[in-house]
Image (cartoon, rainbow, N blue to C red; front, top):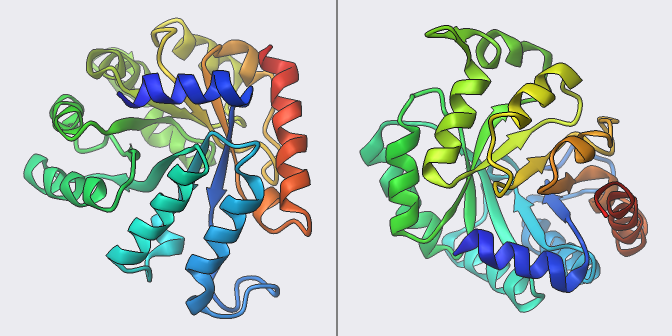
Length: 250
């Protein structure tokens, strides 16, 4: 199972670092030149940082030009370097369509995926994910300011993120919670979310999220993307973040 395998890697590597693979296309960053380099860029980052990372999170919006064969190659590289992968596609559709996506996610070698709960079929998606032995990370409370219009609205007297947290418990899933979210909301979620659920934390690094979220949720994995992958020394940057995280989680 994904969560068991992830915990074993955390114990073995003494790390809770997830590296976000967000290779920007031509024109978005001065040090990135052509879409043809996407796979090579990702493979190099994995090679340079795998001593310190337990997870890699390729963002589909950035790696969209990759073929199925290239996706398989990327996941092979990740697994050879003793890490797991999350396809960050924020899956969001009806049940049969989601299931088709899960089929291909598994075929391409990914170990887990991110899921948007807004269609409302969290339980069904969790069940289908288990049938493919895939981990699920459900968007629970995101960092962007307008997320409050959806994730902090009321559903049958509950805040939406409370409803989502309850469903995560039911499907043995995991949560995605931004490090820039307000402490009051984080505490409310932590009172509902089971302690054995992983919390993937984006927003630390370029977005300057607060590290104290790691004290609120004990079972965290911290995603750092641009600060590592665009560093002149990705390996050193990854090690530095691993050690920063360790100070708050040990």
